[in-house]
Image 1 (cartoon, rainbow, N blue to C red):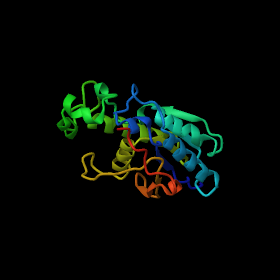
Image 2 (cartoon, one colour):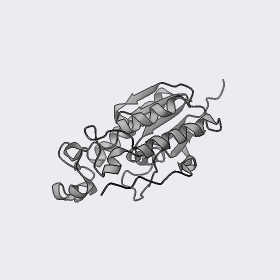
Image 3 (cartoon, rainbow, N blue to C red):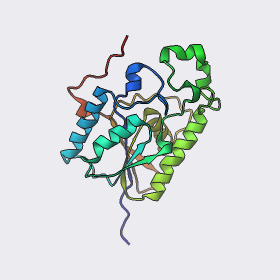
Image 4 (cartoon, rainbow, N blue to C red):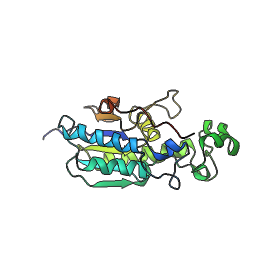
Amino acid sequence: MSKQSSTRLLFVRHGESEVTVRQVIGGDKACTGLSDLGLQQAAALGQRWAQGNEPKVDALWSSTLPRAFETAELLAEPLGGLDVQTHLDLVERRPGMADGVAFRDFSDQFEWERDHHPHIPLAPGAESQSDFFHRTGKAIYELVEANPGATMMLVCHGGVIDVAFRVLLGLAPSAPFVLWTLNTSITEFSTTDRPGLWRLVRYNDFSHLHGLPTRTEPAV
């Protein structure tokens, strides 16, 4: 019997978004897609794949939020003309009534302390940290179970990548560390010979962004 090849997960954080430039919380209502710099970042990542030095990707998945979907669309052709498959549960933590609220106004409308309790929603109608962890972790494992031996790219969000670290590496949901995942950076995990044991191959690989600005300065 032939040995099954490793399953690979390539997490890509979306390009810089318009909501980041506008400094507002971007859920389904407020997200309007990529900034000009975000488009350049996604194009640079696509060029990197077109050079042929990265793993062949079998399936391309994306969050349904516009900033992720636009990034995935720009990657589809360089990846070999893949279809973009969307997954509702790869979206960032759902903000409820905080959707569209300016960062500077959040503390006036909601209590920052809510974000530090795992079972209290960030705002009315929003997800708690524990709900977000369960929803996202379940989605990742369902994709892995349905696609053994495949190399999948998941174009998603910084929060989703944070959950991936905790779920795939067996870390507690409340493990005290902070990730600073850059736009269009690559984070790669692969299975090992030991069932259930994953290997972190790379984190925050953004070498394709050389020469681009680090961010768009927010409007005053």
